[in-house]
Length: 122
Image: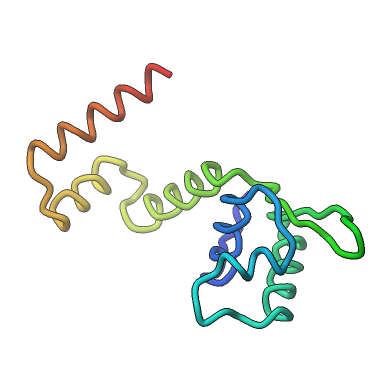
């Protein structure tokens, strides 16, 4: 998977990731106002299907859509693209940049390291 989502596609995917499956109407209900038109959301979902991000199954007279890509897989791929595109593939450079830009203090960094170490043990 090397496809990037547009902002609109990402909004739809976030809803589908949170609900696991949903109709177009249910997706719209979860989107922030101003709500997009039904046809707009339906078109975006069909685009996501052609990109193999979303699948569907029949339910009653309509369809229910579900993600084919895990959120963590997409997040990881996006992070790698950011790292490779802006930080010459260096995780250290990327973390250093975010630490400087966000003015992280030692306690915040220590907290992040504890979280990383905790996840490594899973």
